[in-house]
Image (spheres, rainbow over the protein chains, first blue to last red):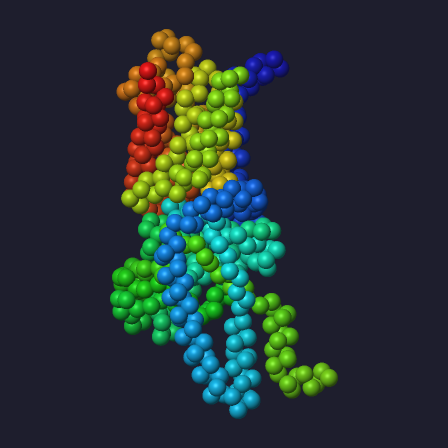
Amino acid sequence: MNSIFQFLYKNLHHIVFVALEVVCFVLLFSYNSFQGSIYLSTANRATARLVSSKDRVTSYFGLAEKNRDLVAQNAQLQQRILELEAAASMHHLDSLAHIETMEQIHRTGYNIISAQVVDKSINKTNNYLTIDKGEADGVKPDMGIMGVNGIVGVVYKCSKHYSLVLPILNSKSSVSCKVLGSDYFGYLRWEGGDARYAMVYDLPRYTTVEIGDTIVTSGNSTFFPSGLPVGTVEEKLPSTDGLYVTLKVMLSTEFARLEHVFIMGKMDAEEYAILQESLNPKKKKKKN
Amino acid sequence: MERILTYAAWILGLTLVQVLVLNNIFLFGVATPFLYIYPILILNKHINHNILMLIAFAAGLLVDIFSNTPGVNAGAAVLIAYMRPGVLRMYAPREEFDDFEPSIHVLGPMPFLRYALTALLIHHAAVFLLEAFSLAHIGYLSLRIVCSTLLTTMLVMAIEFIRNRH
């Protein structure tokens, strides 16, 4: 018995080493699942406070560029309002068409919550962002995130006041997208390296695409409505099996200087059902 | 006691520097320094091996929590703490010194450089391999490991020269 203890004591450092490494691997793998704990991330309260206080300092750098982007976006939105107003005035007298348009808008109904990026990384294979809005602000996992110039990623986990975002720059992220003006879908992936570029896979070989074409979201997932900018085609590469083309895409979002983001929450399923009902007079009458 | 406090200050200070500054460095798209491991390299040679590993685990986990990489830095730090006596034996013959803290002052600049380079290479390789957890881009990954190791080694040597200038 004594010799067993002696043996254990002599080899204690091996045992401690193995035990600690086992703990590390458990952390490593449990974190990869969606159920992983929020406490070991930058979205928990204490760490988020620290990183956001850093952000308060660093967010002053590059204000001019951010302003320029916001002004550009304002202009775009203004343009969009004018277009929509023009479209709305055309349908003004046709009440049926009006209902249809309303229905269309609500079908792609997304609530927009704006947030600030408090922490981010771009130099890993699996990068994450931390934003300063959480459950208390109505943010839930699986909501899409958009930046000023294009899509950013998807909400991964939420604490009360902060959320962890799985950006495009994470090998686990995959976003359905298409070439603007065509209907063929592919998916966008990033596999490490340069944070400015990502790849679009699985587009059929016969898709007509030119260098400089715009890539937008396809709307095939609930994360993003269709037509949000993703990037522009930089290079066209044939895939190994010859059936598909792979595109190297320059991302619209510059992750290196990302500060403001918009969270797009798809309206709740129930809410959506009620909304549809109210827009459909026939059903309403029946109920009454 | 004073020495323990000094070490605690080193570890906490460098962990803060790591998460607030160094984690954001991405030199030439390849190099990211991991300086938080420096206190593990310079702790007294005769510190209890188990305690060394526990300290490394704590420091690594702290960095992990701030970098959203649970297990990665902790695992790598524990690995280097586990291997440190072996690495140290390679560059510091046992009979010469009994009780010392590895530094350029005690070991001499070249042996310390070799010691730091070896230890940091092991640590950085572990960090990058655990983080990527795939060998799909092994060329780029190797480049990142080597460049980051060189960058961290430069920082470590700079700190060593500043600490030992008398």
